[in-house]
Image (cartoon, rainbow, N blue to C red):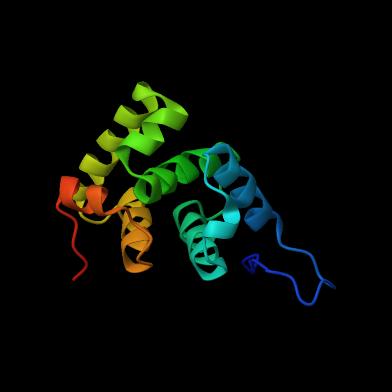
Length: 132
């Protein structure tokens, strides 16, 4: 089976693919404007999602990924102001588990934020993150 490809669009003639539109919507819902995330990073995120869910990422996966990514960029306090303490603690548990696991889907998302140099310095320090 041929895998579906993501598309950024071209000169306004071809539209963005559905997965990128879903990610943009989820990023907005996570209080992170999609324009603040480079297109290459968004393409990588949706490709990681396709690798993790080979058939098709479930629609509820987009908000979960967006919240994790938003936390990485915004940092703990800003994220908590937008989402509340419970969501902050949930995301922090996910990051702790990702750091412990070393190679998980959440770890790949955090690593993407780190490699793209979008990650908040407090998040790097708090979780002892480093790109090797």
